Length: 446
Image (cartoon, rainbow, N blue to C red):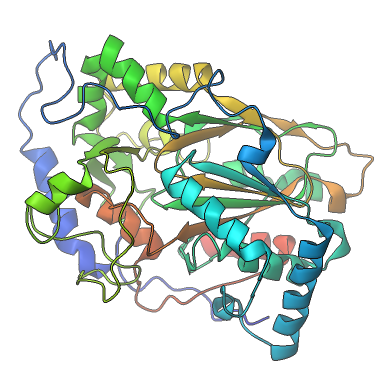
């Protein structure tokens, strides 16, 4: 497998692709010039936002989520597994690089259409899909990565950058159980995580090579649409707080030390966007194509959205807002206001109330609409008597489907650019061995 071996040296000088410098300055100016916010006596949602979202498959809670697993899970059949093995053998015979794995090079004539239908459901339906039935223990590390890239390409062929060294896949495991230097980041510890989104990716994919060997490691998922409707009815002032542009996000020591944007966004229905002219946003620009930060009309327009409805989106990482053990919040960054702290607390409470819980089994995937579904993780424990090869190990991808992707709010382009934009001197990095990847990224942090 081809990997980038050149040591990573940051050449761009700040936290974002240079193409987005104007947006960064705009973000800073908005914060500096923001007038003192009133005490939000609002009894209704912000102007132009819907008083409630109409019924849709993406608006669910535990009582309305489908009871039949077949409605949100693809169980791979023996014949489809044979199809996967055939595609895998072809890949290996052609010596293709990870970047070259797509729906064409990993052709699945029977399973493929089922995966594409599930992809539409992730974008336009429930917002979540599980794929089960890969005997991951029967494959090598490299073969598992090939299978991951092949199956996930049916959900999105564009893979986002997850680290400054250009890593396109990330291993999730408890470093301490592998006798590695401890690391308090959520990727490498077994602590519980609160509800959040993962950066600014469209689709979040996680592939479970092995669940926790003792207990825990479950994920809960909550529909943002359900949460929004509850807030619109009971706490519309919190929607104003979440939608305000003054949330200060820590950039973890980069220049600038923080940037500001909202946590919650609303994009109007497609027909309202069309009335505005040639784009939908005020400046006439749609979401940039991946790795293109000066957007231009696509030669093949995406298929129409059959729902013709406005969308509520969120992008939040509580660690960037309140600090964590690994990244205590610097005193130089503006603290959260009492209203912001209250909004985060209520958001966590509602997410717990309206969530469903699922534990990934060995050889299973989850594909998540990262903009409309919040997720968390329970603490997990590995049995020290069980070989480390059977301890909890997941691989994560950030995906984008250029045809079905939602329009990204302009205020998210800065974070979106860190995932799908181009950084000078940074290529793609694929490391299939989790211990090697951990050691290398630890040296990079140093």
